[in-house]
Amino acid sequence: MSAAFGWMDAAPVRAVMAALNAKGEARFVGGCVRDSLIGRPPAPLAKGGEAGTTDIDVATTLRPEETIAALKAAGLAAHPTGVEHGTITAVADGLPVEVTTLRADIATDGRHAEVAFTTDWAQDWRRRDFTINAIYSDADGTLFDPAAGQADLDAGRVRFIGDPDTRIQEDYLRILRFFRFTSRYAAAPDEAGLAACARQAEGMARLSKERIWQEVSRLFATPNAPAMLAAAEEAGVLRQVIGASARIGLFARLHDHLYPDIPEALAVAALWPDAGPGMLREAFKPPTALIGRIEALREARAHLTRERGAPLLRALYRFGREAVCDAMLLEAAEGREAQDWLSLLSEAERLRVPVLPIGGRDLIAAGLAPGPALGEAISRFEAEWLAQGCPADEERISALLERVVRERR
Ligand code: ATP
Ligand code: MG
Image (cartoon, rainbow, N blue to C red):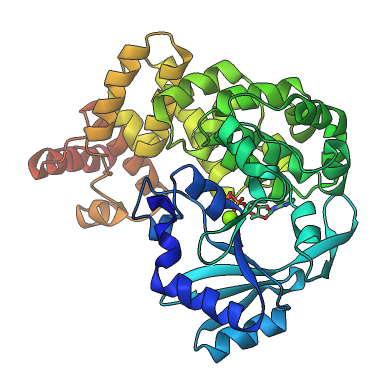
């Protein structure tokens, strides 16, 4: 067995598997097996090989309550994190392991499944989405690969298990998962899968915005995101999600520059420059902070392009470092004068962000009466202070303060 499977021998992992195998049968499945096969062990236990991003998933013949009992009998913690679909989180020595009862989806409506627990491995693998996601391993590393996922993984193919149209109709989120997994594990989209995604795209209307956002945002940070987003746009999948067309070229240049760390806000701003906050909320219900960051970067961008050559400190003062840097990255990705923007960016990353050094209290202490004149005086001070390049030294600040107070008295 390759070094990437070494995590299976870690004491906490052994403890969980031994507890489950004492009462039933348990196998690793999903990302932890798939990624170990390509040399990327689960993140918390990456010793041999490059650290992966996946967690540890285990499938078991035990029912959820039996899983809890088996874990507790072995002195391990068991948290019912998703008990309605059979998932218990086991924690051994601080390491979480997701343990899910074998199941069959007996009724589906395109977004939820009514599940039946089973002890039949054949039912469990058939309800999984892609062949590469249905590779199991027992505690000793013996593989059980009923859908021939390993051959697909080696060949760089992401294929649905069973008929793609049928599998998508059970859960339309699989369309977005198809693009995400293809980006990570395949050279090009599987034709049958892609055609089914295009045919079924309309069904995505029934998905919750939160699930859509979760998948789409994970897609941004995958290695072939530009090509996959282009394929998803062409298949009509993205247009089903959001009412604006995607600018793949801009996103691609941003991705080239930033991968693997692409802030979600930047990705969205690059892909859908014409989508306002209302449309973004309607499409994704994203976290409020994301909309805020996009709005801030747009304002900073308008300012920076309108006032080329204006002092950078002023922009940093008004918009903050994050928005200014985001705006510059996007301008650089536009490709016009990219080098100029990148050197401005390194300056913006380095410079101190100015903070207005006085407040109303300072003006009152200097002799100004409280009231509306105070606000005006602060604005006056701010304008002068900005004009002077945001000085931070005491002397210049007090001189400026005195002057403003004198004018107002
Ligand atoms: P990663 O965690 O690296 O994204 P993963 O394969 O572990 O990859 P999870 O979302 O953690 O992905 O799901 C674990 C497993 O559950 C998958 O490998 C797959 O077998 C199954 N699965 C998850 N979501 C679906 C779905 N919507 N339809 C069918 N099977 C699914
Ligand atoms: Mg996983």
